[in-house]
Image (cartoon, rainbow, N blue to C red; front, side, top):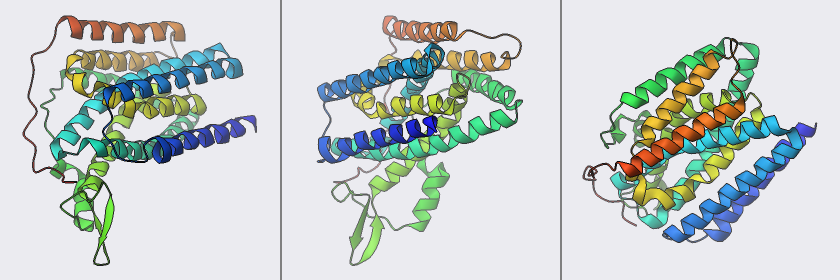
Length: 316
């Protein structure tokens, strides 16, 4: 009963924050400047650490350490999302004043989908223990594949099944019509290009969730810890995007660091029945890999690469 109360209170608190974000602080569409983005990033990080402290006094040091490790991993893996978001907005030429709205509703959808993934994943692991070996092998495979994959900086919306299906089912306008996702013309409902961008963002997150959720389940089997760490990492994703959008290219070695983290977490799962790796050491390994990859990126900068030329812009 106590856990249920915490679930209800937590989700009510998150809905309150999201409501204030959309209807008070960002009621009018505007371009988010770097200073504003940094302040919001600091707010979400501070709020996450404050919640981590609450977990420490409520559940104890071990769950608090699990939350911090899961939050750090999810936050790190989200960096890959940011680069894809940059490509999507660049490809569709989405005006900067509408990008926050798309990310807001994209993250709302991501929270719902990830909540379902987490509850299903925890239930399956509790019932079928062998699944942890499948998840471990999947993470190792994904990490190795990520390390050797080459990002050509291109998008192919025509190959996205969600985009294809929506395009066939809904009529679309050619302009964004004031930042709306839907509009009526002569009594008929039309979707705008911004809705297509939103579908692209949502479907991209589904792909990323396939990597991040197993990684977090390797850290904790407590659905509340897994869910809340995901929520706080995602809530700060929009602010992080606007804060880092202009300098994402600097962290080119982070990609390899993330792949190594996935391999490490996968190995931790595979060896879990033979050897238990203390969460303090796991957190130290994850933090060290991230620090080394960021420092290496700054010490050995990558040559600039140009993004492919975009199609016609989404007009306001």
